[in-house]
Structures are given as structure tokens and as C-alpha cells.
View (cartoon, rainbow, N blue to C red):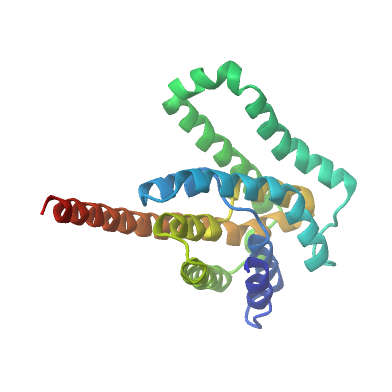
Length: 252
């Protein structure tokens, strides 16, 4: 669903080609892991389902995203090759596998260092984004992206997020999912990973293109966190009220 929406949105005539390319790339990325799980838990959804869904999306995205980029963005990017695939696997897949293999060795210690892990997690994402974006600024990003482009990115990102949240909510009802699973579908299905997207962009696109490509992703990432946090609190409160009503009826 996301790539189809991306193709439609990137074809809008008022979008400059670099912005359109970035929006299309955004729609080809996998879901987030940490925020999808955290928001699902906040909304009282199926956390186990969120873990499986978000993890599978990220693993599949390591292979599917470069393939979709090579098919849908031919002539717009630096090209996909075995070397690019190897680099992406080393940056994203190898750490994932290594972490799971070491879980029995360091898992307990990691679990006891939640504050430290939060700092490391956020700092690593910040460094990845800072490095890619700083290089783009040095190479003249702001000479290619105007204030009008930034406004267009913000508006299009908001509309795209609203569409996806609405469609995933309707799809969950149409499939007959219960409330907890509809929450998983909506939150995991509407997210896009900044942590995966920036390294992939650095590998798949030429250095002068990277800044413009990740700009829509940065806007969308912040919007999805803010909007979904509001939704998660509302869903959680509704679940709490329903449970309280159920207990009250049972006591009667």
C-alpha cells in the first residue's frame, strides 16, 4: 500500500524532483521497531504481535527496500549492486543477528541497563542522521531545497500519514481483527524507520542526493511519533474505560 501511495504522491506536479524522490523513497522503507512496540504497549495492544510485525518488517526491508528502489526509482538514484547489498547487510543485518546470538550472554546485563541503552540507542540514531545531513548541507542542500519545498514536504507528509492511519484502521476492521490486533496493524503499518532509512540512503544514492532524499523521512518520522503518541494514549484510555465498565457490570 505504501509504495502505491508513494508513486501517486511523487507524481504530483508541484513537487520538485528531489522532494518527490525523497517521498517515494520514504514509502519504500520498513517499519520502526522500538517506537512501534512502545506505542502498541501504550495503546494496550498486542505487544507480542507488534514485536513480530516490526521485526519482520525490518528484516524484510533490508532486502525488499533496495529491490523496490532499483525497480521504482530507475534513473533517479545511484543504482543497486551486489556491493550495495553487502554494505546494507553489514550495517543493518549483521548487528541484528549478532545481538540475538549474544542475547544469552549479555541479555540480562542489557536489561538491567535500560537508561544507558536508551542513551546509546538515541545517540546512535542522532549520529547517523547528523553525519548524513551535515554532508548534504556541505554539498549545498539548502541551495536546492527552498522554504516552499519544506512546506510541501510537511503538508504531503501529514496527508500521507493521515491516509495510512485511516486505511490501516479500516483494513483491520474489514479483516475482523480484534482491538489489540487492529492497534498493531495501525501502528506498525504506518511507521517508517529513520534508523534504517538513513544508512540505506547513504548506500543507494549518490552523496549529493542523500540530504534531499532523507529530508521527507525526517519530517515524516517526527509527525508519526507525535500523532501516534496521541492516538496511543486515546486507545489506552478507551481500553481502561472498557475494562472498568466490564468489572462494574461483573460486580453487578
